[in-house]
Length: 627
Ligand SMILES: Cc1ncc(C[n+]2csc(CCOP(=O)(O)OP(=O)(O)O)c2C)c(N)n1
Image (cartoon, rainbow, N blue to C red):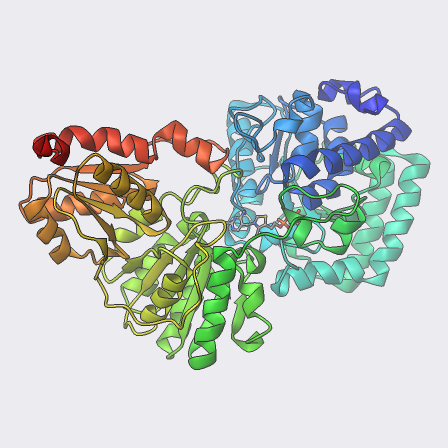
């Protein structure tokens, strides 16, 4: 490993470096990231973009007394490296290793955890107000990407900042990319600033001045010149209207400029916004060429950036099904909140460009926008990860369900997400959707059934949702989608002593358990529930008549989940048949490999068998009867 990086154990070690050494350190960190992430996977592109920015921040400020907040916090790898976590870095996103995001419990330098976008400014303002009330002096710096400003919460915070504190530094890290290209008027506004030739000129000018004289005077000169230009260009600068002093745009890879600018901003007596321009993927050609792919990915070849081709994913199966349905039904439109790649909708876009909408990181807006379109006869399909749809709970209730509008929610990454950890696990959607009147909630066992469910949704006159996991599909032979009878489960195998319900992709576990129990001499029924709501109460009642126990498998928290729905239904029909619920416990699940975490938390066939066997003991074992 290169010499300088090895000598950095805490931010204090940075302070004695020269700018030339800092520049060398930046390159060493880049190489370290490229090599290390090629083995673990992770958010390579965003992190390569903020190496100098992070070093400059740590050079000027002193964490943990000063507070750094990063929006989403997927770009904190340099921060982790310089705050004493370099030696553990190979464990990032691995079981028991470093988390891929900021985590308050991981390190005293991580003052605020995140994983969802748009939270940094609000949380930073909260910290600033708390500091002001306590008479503290610490600096609070919030770094947010250009795409974070497509999110309403960032603007809700902006609306309050200047009224509530005089000391807050917001850094707009502008690389013109969300995961895909950033979209909308805000993105265009930033782009106009960045590409304006007056600013380009100014930018060069200010760089020279800073390098020549350095410090506060230089930044004052820079600011005066920029103000003059702004007066001509945009009399009402967006951030100035919000009461923040705007500085920039500055080159986010120019360490001396960043350092001098932060030294100046540290003493500002008004909240400020520093606009820095960075390049996503900087220093690794494949990541600069394929920005979208290298936003976040699994292991890759550190020379070429090549990744191994995987099997078809649920996201791809969803996109294929949607193309097929949209070909047949002109009312179908697709909506994503800045996740065309992750949800598979970028495969839909070329087929129906006019029926595809990326609204930015704006899940609430996405859902209300869908509601609006649905009132005019369209059939909107909102493809949103289970974890991000949490943002839009009220619009689902208030705008879609209450008005009985036929919006289909396709919940990708429903279930444990694995490496990304608790901010990204999709473990709560059944709980938050099940209690909403009018909602039809489904989970497919394979990709054909996913298409069936989407087709079924198009026949409904109200809201519906389909949940499916991350990762590869079951891999069944493709057939044309068919409309399913709503609220009807599928009996895979009949049985008389125990009924095992395997929700969605957990069905194979139900089948496996049935085989094990049958080997022990029990008669086990296997059921593919298909519908979480409405539940197939008739079928449940039939089995409640004969079986000694039910078992439910679901990739969701136990509390308020599918098994709970079964329990409630049985209780309401007066049944006393016990239900063994195999689901995630009532706690946040860490990151790790899905299979290992299932073992750890008892989402296994063996655990189900252990729990159900005592309930079956009053049934006669056939082997015993026979002997
Ligand atoms: C509420 C929410 N929706 C979607 C995402 C998925 N997501 C993660 S990073 C990202 C793009 C972030 O872009 P930007 O803030 O500009 O940072 P960059 O990666 O370009 O540095 C998105 C959409 C998220 N984290 N949170």
